[in-house]
Image 1: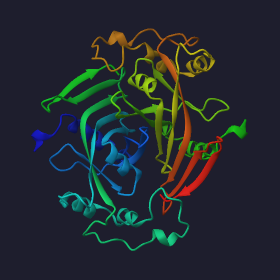
Image 2 (image 1 turned 90 degrees about the vertical axis):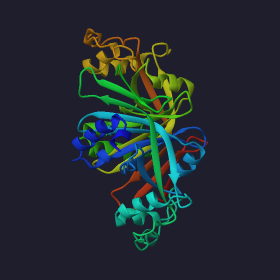
Image 3 (image 1 turned 135 degrees about the horizontal axis):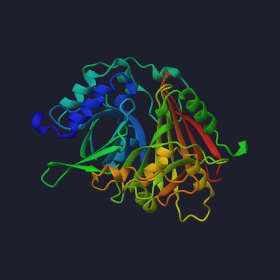
Image 4 (image 1 turned 180 degrees about the horizontal axis):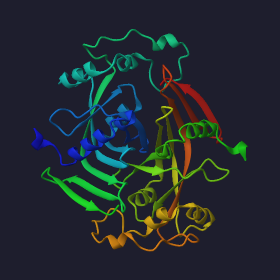
Length: 193
Length: 193
């Protein structure tokens, strides 16, 4: 298993550990391309790596704009800033949608079972981005079962092909680029910050 | 002057004020499109609004990737997360490059004069993104004059056309969209989170 882990994984694990006192150190910004070819950018929560892979897990609602965008163009870039250690990771790669129609459901079900009740309940809310429904009852549906995911629950898998790590604590700043070559090996290069 | 201020300006000012104890509350993530049509995303520092306008100021190096990208496609989206108040602003719009060739130099010079010596010195460092030059002397050029900007100093102006404000403290979350209409008036709409 550990042989499959990319060389940037231990660096990222260390950053997560050193910033563990900050809840928002597990949030990052995911950029995609919208239907007009313009960039879209939003904060999402890191839900761990898919086991034995370098794929980052994110959850979302099938009715959200990002699903339409990823269906159209699967490219994404994650920008992850760690405030305590003053480090940034930029991960470029592609997103895969694991929704209710995906053949292999086990990873989607497993993620659903890990969520809190309050996270699960958000998938019963009215359609995101539509004009606000004033009636608050629409936001207080019963908490769905923890066994089976609801229809709109989507697991996103992000597969990085390039990782750019910047350390701002050092003077001069340190910057290292990890890049998959044609034989799917990770190449490492120190570059000017 | 205050008549020109967009309705989201006072909301954003309040968030900046409430998060002022956190240095990183003045950092946001700027997404652009790279030369392959893929998203690019990095953390930048908010350098205030250009006076009497709704344009956000950012500084960068003329040799950075984002300058090549913005020259090719000026669209951008800023994602700005405020950890203390658990709010997110997404600002979509366009970027304008104010470099050494720009006709009107006064705003570029003004920004340069506001910077710290250490920020100014970074513009004398070797070309960003190129293989690391091991000799540390290359990173310790004399601090440039505070009067006139160096060649590679660039001011970016970001003009928002849409702002999406999400408040996560509330249950259900509150989300408001501000959008410029055809007559350049800001329309406001509460939407489902």
